[in-house]
Length: 160
Length: 160
Image (cartoon, rainbow over all chains, first blue to last red; front, top):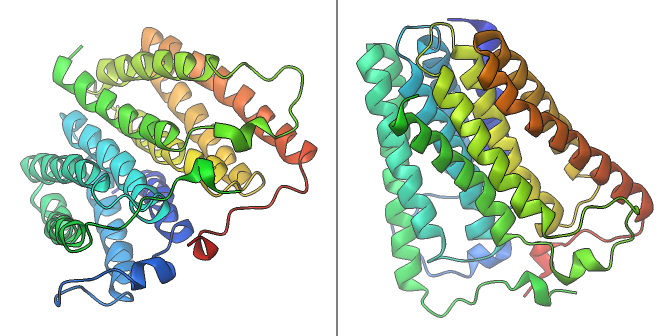
């Protein structure tokens, strides 16, 4: 594994994680009605940090292999849609608007997991927890949107 | 060029561009004091759309070449930080907080342009307008932060 490649992929993940940090759940999220299986808040940063380390390892492992184009294209795609989700959900409070973002993110992670496996067993294995987690996150987003139909999106144009 | 790769890279760009669409300039941006060389609002979506087409073409062109790992790693990195910038600047209204994001984005675009050139002349050429544009955008961000020292960031935790 090339260390500099790992650093670039991990920096990418930090960019994605930064939206979660600058748009945190906060008091608004506390007021939402949630399913009983909602993970406690502390679980999210722990899981995301682990996933970022694992997928940066996976991408750095395959990046110099022949035919890694699709794997790295899907890596870029999940990075963009993962970065997009937090400001839409926690920033604009668009529970339903976040669903298509989550759907595209899920497809990108599926594509990334599949193409990493095709190149290297360990890289595919390192991507697998992400696919499991994004499936849980998608189920949670769907459930939250259904349980909280009256939540108003934040209209930033109307804010001071 | 592989069309399916182009589609994945362009979808990535759409994810990045979506933050610009869901966090638009709006009335708050109108109130900022701006340098006389600020591009008019209509220029931004036109330039970004052109850049997205050009860099998706560039990445799809190099993705199946040997040694494209670094080029695609920098592509992923610019995608994440480009997606992050709009919600920090237009969402949280953090004119100074957006500067480190812009700095990392600039480095990622420099790295992407360089590594695409190293693989293929046309791919590097297709990335060059992005490097020029992100330099203009960084200069604009710096100037706006300097001209508007009293702008208050939006505290989302305090909003309804």
